[in-house]
Length: 172
Image (spheres, rainbow, N blue to C red):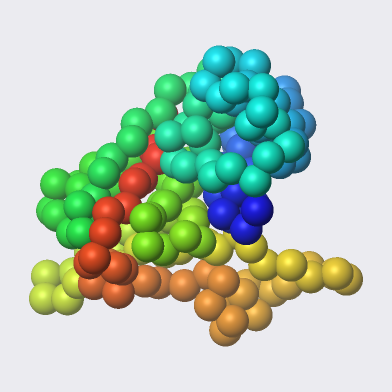
């Protein structure tokens, strides 16, 4: 159950961005509603609904496409190797589309949203990652608190796992 919830939170963050910036007329779906959407569009069998099965970046892209009517692109990053070409694709995405990008990995099971890219001449590229799994019962957190507790942080691409792959879902 943990994996499906983790990916769904990032999906919900991306869908919230669409609601706020593109005025898309849908409610951000719950976990069960996401599973039902995947079943209804023919991606998953009926037994998937209310199961503990894993949701990946591709499935999240399908839900984004279904609800927003916008396509998506999946980019595979082998062994955490964020090449210049991949960084350029991310930069181009943020300049053209602006939507958060989902980062999901084989080894790194806690999906994250990427909301910005910072490049340097003499240092590793950094990704501004938003971990949407923060929870607070009362009130809203400040940006300072989220940064201090690393829910929102600049992550060097060299910090990501080099043992397995990552997938990026870029809503278009």
